[in-house]
Image (cartoon, rainbow, N blue to C red):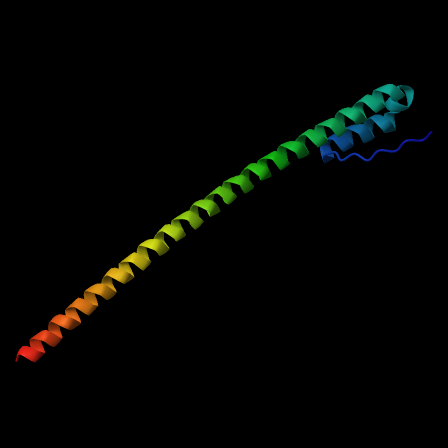
Length: 105
């Protein structure tokens, strides 16, 4: 049965493999070629996993900062609503005081 795998390697590894193939080294030692390809596949997958873990970590940090921003926005809104209420109450008291002063004149 003919199995096919696809691997991704950097240019340096590709050139090294290509050079060995041209010299016929891998044609003489197929198990060595298979080991090299499996090692390169493992390295590629390991790098992908590391990249994905890094991206996941960054996304978690962004998510946590968004949650913190949302929490602060709720607190700010609550504070502003309380402040607006106190200003409104103070405004009503001042208007009443002004009306009382105008009535007394």
